[in-house]
Length: 423
Image (cartoon, rainbow, N blue to C red):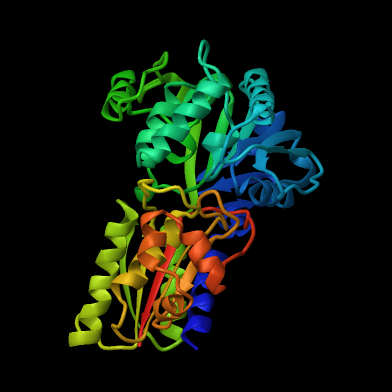
């Protein structure tokens, strides 16, 4: 029953992050005026409406725009991952490489730049940004090459750099990120609809902030190269707060991890659990975060604090894995394995962690699920859980136990959802 419940709770979180519905919740159109959050735009003021952008949720977000505005959308171009393409009347959905950027992404980024540059004061650009936009919309600033940019991203990930650090570097190697897209579009009006995959919903970090003033500097990016012992590349400064390029830009967050966790909490309470949201700001090394969650579950089991079972612990955010071994896995799978080991012999606790995008590291799984039987069952199969964890091989561990969570690409991304049911 606990496994069934945990999957229902995750489904509620995922449904709350549906990109098309997120767009339609924040945009309304009465036939004359477009309402975006608290702002309104009379369409009679515009000759053309374009939809541009990139991200894992790009297809669904574009579908929402097409559904709302129909033939009023003149054209559009959105870079999306492989496998989620759909046909839309006036918006081209262009499959591109993710998580490793490729030439298709560069070609698509050039098309997006061309639309932005061609726009004038009577154009409205609706920019759709979601998780994965940084990789899906690559346009390196010369003399940096795509191969160099790919390699530096790979090395930063392997070092355990945070998404804030990685995107700081990306912005200063790009022609489109870090506010450059807004500068290219000026003096057109830009409404950026943003599905957040970043802790704290920092606008200049999500998708590397193509329509947002950049608070980071070349010096910040250079310091990150130095911190991780990497040879620096040629860096370029980005538009800052106060730049007139942002005078006609509205940046609007339409979905986030917090909304997903709130929906999960409502479902958990409906299923009869005392529900505790630990945080939607969780970051740090995956194994450390797993130990912290396990410690709270142990306290509940042993003392009934901070609540008596049945309890549902929820957290969101995005952790990082420091790669020590040569195995296969992702941060969610590693979290579940580390937490299961920490809770071995400690009662009825079900552990779940998955990415809302359906992708966990370089695997075809979104995450994994474990309970009190997982570690004993592995030992009976002569699988040493500690060895798998030390080798960062959580995928093969859970694959042999039939405990991987596979959703396929979901077309959204609001970071991770972690669930612990303590019964």
